[in-house]
Length: 113
Length: 126
Image 1 (spheres, rainbow over the protein chains, first blue to last red):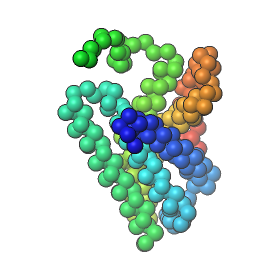
Image 2: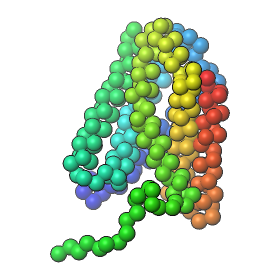
Image 3: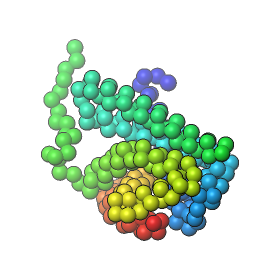
């Protein structure tokens, strides 16, 4: 991808991830509204199911990508001193990485338990 | 030699008067940022709820009570607004709802629907 098209790539990723996040959020909301787990065993069985588990992991990754592009755009628009902007971008990137691994760890560990 | 034009760039939120589309847009940003900031707590709750029956009960208690309910409401409002505004952007990408009057009406609809859906979802879940 050329330097010139990097904005286009971010634009496309933002829309692709938005569609997955949107659809999966609707599914999550529907589950919590209409068939919410009533105890730990049910919760664990639902989220540890192979299909839901993989879909959740994809959700985690798409949220990370979507949040990165969104927060990056906000920082570029509102934080002008380049050193502060770079530092904040670094903090955001590392935080997203840490949060993604934390969520993935919880989702995977519950399947092994 | 590149010349810098002194065209006015208005990003100062306190100085500009936003039309409804702009209000919807800035709430889209604010809700996105809020959900980003809420992520660590949401993941903490997920991790806690999956740690065992005790953690599950603890996470359940955390989203009830006054502050818990307020938090869930803010997340649901954010999700509803961000999703609806996002769908509106996707439709505009394919040239649907681009005309000024239509764009204003859909923007207003998104702004109004956000907190209403937020309340309904919070009420339905807790």
